[in-house]
Image (cartoon, rainbow over the protein chains, first blue to last red):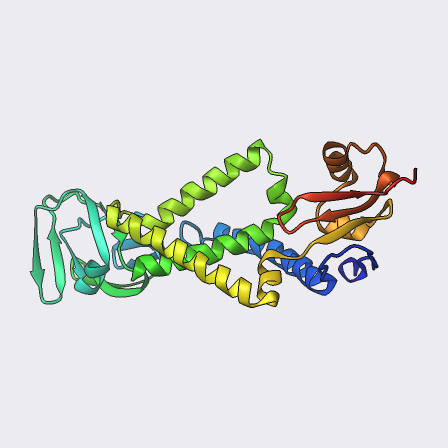
Length: 163
Length: 150
């Protein structure tokens, strides 16, 4: 291996060469370069959010909930509720989720919002709400779990928020 | 508390990044490298302060950076090994006019870099006029010319 075959020198100047340590540094540098590309590959897959691995889609009855499993601290994401046939009347979000997320926008705007038990309920007006989007900003790093109910149909959400 | 953790983490991370880039790369910085460094500093700033635009937050972060730097300086003074680990050691690249290809390749230095240093610092014209070319800890190349007998 080239790294181990660094030329030997016997200099007649006062110099503090440490070829052993230098070789180790070269080796670690190569390892670090490989690590950089591995990290980039993982980022592309979505392990740090915004990708195939991160995106989760759960369908129950007529409703489909799409969300990212991996969030990044203070980086805005969307939780989408989609239905082809049934209108979304209420969305209840567990307080455990509400505590760690800041909701910046809800489309369409709910007509009212109130607390029931350990959930915050958002009520929507009309009979053609086939898509609801919650724009949220995670405010605490770590694992966040909670239940999101669409018209009383429960979806278990689990996120990991990178610091 | 969070600001302190962020500050310390980013200090250590940037230290690793600088080591991974290689000391020669830092010393050779081109115009684009400066743009890259500015981008890195901008991204770092955002990661550090986030949505905290307060004067207190900025003061805390500066204090954390300076304090960590002092700690590292003290440790480097106390421990020779730690100092060498963090800053590296000088490395001879040319020995009595003969280039040392493995050392040069691994340090990302080519013949032109050495001749550039030889011309600009010593006014030398040929490789065989160089006794030693040393890649210093700061990434600069020192040239020691062969003393010509009168």
